Image (cartoon, rainbow, N blue to C red):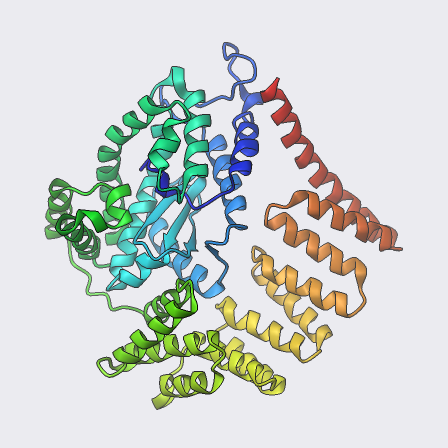
Length: 499
């Protein structure tokens, strides 16, 4: 899928500065006959970008994406999407990179795979999915692209043009996302032939991703008809009105042959009658509200949810009231939000996202004691969910109980060491406690995890200056050396490439 719509919006400056350095990353592994300064792009027999370089590209693009306004930093949404992807990728062949899924604030129906196993999902796609198996089908398709290494294979179709193709095409893809003239932007990099080659290759890549994804979908216990049903609806919608065709049909060219292939495969397997999880309905409701880009959009979403409550029953009705409550919270109409929350929980119905909403409502009333009590109960009932844990830490901080917040956050960081926000929250509490060293060390961890290494080094240097403990200073010195080494490596690689 070479179209520029596959990459989330990233800064042009980052693309211009970062990609050359990354392309030089494999320089130490050059073959003897390789021209000096060019990266090892993999075995000539496989004609692939090396997994090492592909991972570096993906990591770099993802780090930049974390600072993009379209990136959604929400533990409920990320954990749900990653959970589905984890069930699917567990069925993938050995050696498949770890899959990391993130949500993108965009109402168009689309999803995309990036180098290194990163998969972005537009809010519009989740909102449009009519079942969890449909959503899983799209994710399985994207994971299929990762398993088959289509990005690497596509970028290096012609070995002699590989370096130019990688540098120019990736720069164009990264820089042109969101530009209505994206194809022309790519052409400006002098890569018309390479792009045409990729478009021709993409049809076979899509078939491979379908088949690989189908196998994972079946083995993971999802309804395999979900993939064909979702793609079929999109293809029909595009055929009826090409001027409003969905992004997915443009970046993932569909065909009758592909649809027939998926349907034929479905006839030969056992169809799992898998019900939607409650999470699906609540996440879909939250996605609809998150993608609202204006107050008017939010009001329209509220009206949508309220109009649906009369037609729905059970968990679906509860999720609709939850969506309306989120909208009212956004509009600061807390009384109406509370009414919608009470309707959502009628019949003693509960869900961790509803419990998080109850904490937010208590905090909106400045009732921190109730917020803490509610959050503590939610953490106990939903120990595997990050959202209630963040609500608990926030409630403790709002109540001024920062020492308790620190101790609680330490526990969460042991459990979820990959969650940057826990470190950021800990830094806030340490600051309020007057612990400058711990404040800066935690902020350094946060910056390092979000790709801001220079800021991480600066925080550690400030922590070193504030510390009086030799052992602590030694730990900080070691971490500073590690980050400085990584920074120097990137700078040296950039200089080597430019020379």
